[in-house]
Length: 170
Image 1 (cartoon, one colour):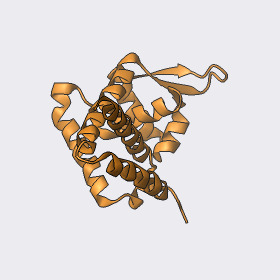
Image 2: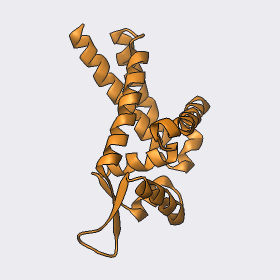
Image 3: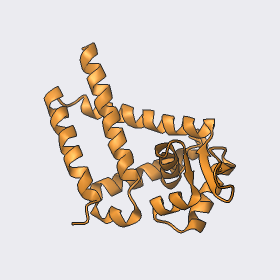
């Protein structure tokens, strides 16, 4: 049982990583996402709004910023963030201001070009990202626990095969 628990955990983490891949999709790519997934995203955002007072959770778009920063080796430029999220720089700036005000990110000058502003997660931002990942992993583990090891393997293989189609333009 202990060996299968490790497999279940690693598979759950793999699905959470795939979910974050979906989170990182540009807005223009989202028309390709199944409507059930978009409803799930909307539900998560609603949960975040309802839980914010109790958990100090952030709306889904702000979580996307945390994911983007974490996925860019812990530091990203404002321009790259704006491009990755497919939003105007002014909108990205407002999102970052909210995160900065909450203590989740900090702005730092680029070491090679002081004109460029880089964003990095603070310890509080890393903690938020880990907490959301942990919560998601626990939920996915509960779902995967209902499947046999073979079904989990097939499920993951299908996810890996299907998700790249979300960004294919052909």
